[in-house]
Amino acid sequence: MAVSPLYDYTLRLADNALILGHRLSEWIGHAPVLEEELALGNIALDLIGEARALYAYAGSVEGKGRDEDALAYLRDAREFRNVLLVEQPNGDFAATIVRQALYAAFVYPLWRALAASKDKTLAAIAAKAEKEAAYHLRHSAEWIIRLGDGTTESHRRAQAALDQLWPYTGELFEVDPIEESLIANGVAVDPRTLQSEWNHTLDDCLAQATLDRPSNRWMQTGGRRGRHSEHLGHLLATMQFLQRAYPGATW
Amino acid sequence: MVTAENLRERAWRAAAGVVDPEIPVLTIADLGVLRDVRVAGDTVEVTITPTYSGCPAMRLIESEVGEALRRAGIGSFHVITMLSPAWTTDWLSADGKRKLAEFGIAPPTSTAMRRALFTKERVPCPRCGSRETERISEFGSTACKALYRCRSCAEPFDYFKCH
Image 1: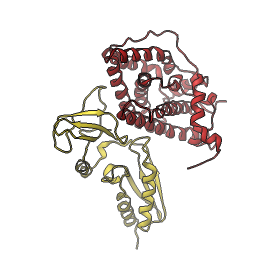
Image 2: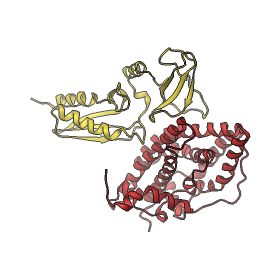
Image 3: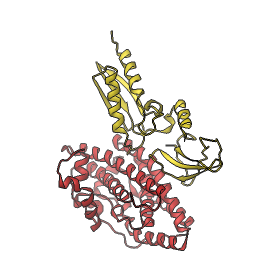
Image 4: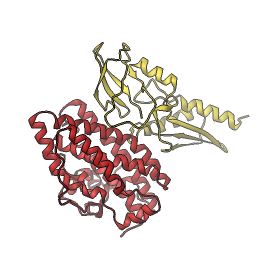
């Protein structure tokens, strides 16, 4: 049952950041080169840091005494509110980079707009996250150009990743009744207002990368309402293992 | 007699001496992580702000500020972490920038601002001063640094990026 629109909205932002941060952390020890090992680890750290601040706030809005750990480790897949895009498996390096660029091109203007939210806590978190997202976007966009405009093989993989992940981008711009009142009150950002900047960023990047923008065919949806792909359960099984095996364990 | 102002100064000096665990040539005052020290009654309130959302050093900095205050004979204190206004490299002190360069880390080249997606920053080499440098990676050993290489002296170096 919904606690409050503000709780749900904050949780969605937090879950996106945590799940993508966790996905990126899966690369640690496996990245193709040392520099990317550091880069993906750093981006993961930024995202998990953003998630922590958002979970702490969601917990205080909820008012049931749940802290960031309770929200991250003690909820099951159906209670997660992240978009499907961020839970998609890492795949090859191209798939990870394309997923990152699709997400970063969306959250960069989202954080910028949310920094002007009437909710002071969300505004403060957003103002920090915007600066981080700027680097994440530049990192992934430059890689898309390198891969797309690189070898036949890197081009093929980047295009395949783009085609595979594109149907998950429609969900980023959805608005539901939970958000409508928050948007009207100047607390939440209407994601539809971010669509043209997102289009522009990607079109510019894909053109330089000599990649084709997939057509907007049927789009996947459901993550924001707790209907996830099978991948999220596997991710949580790893991420939440310690708290499941040893409930209440602390450092 | 301990006046509030005198206590505040003692607390500031103690907190300002805490160094960043990852860049030990800089104090948290040089970095602009130490935002404020206040006295309320006989309790000291120290406000710090994280450089990046996920900065893993924050908890350590918080406990080291506590240690420094205790060493200065201050037992009653709170350390508060504040997110807003968001930390920026514009808060790095001039002294801090000089110490960074001497340590081999290129300091931020300009004031923080929103950039076009693919702008390139010209970063002088902290060792030989050459401007013929290139970025190897947007991310370095910590969130606040990027990896660069000097084409003149061939040395790799860290760049404390604008934020």
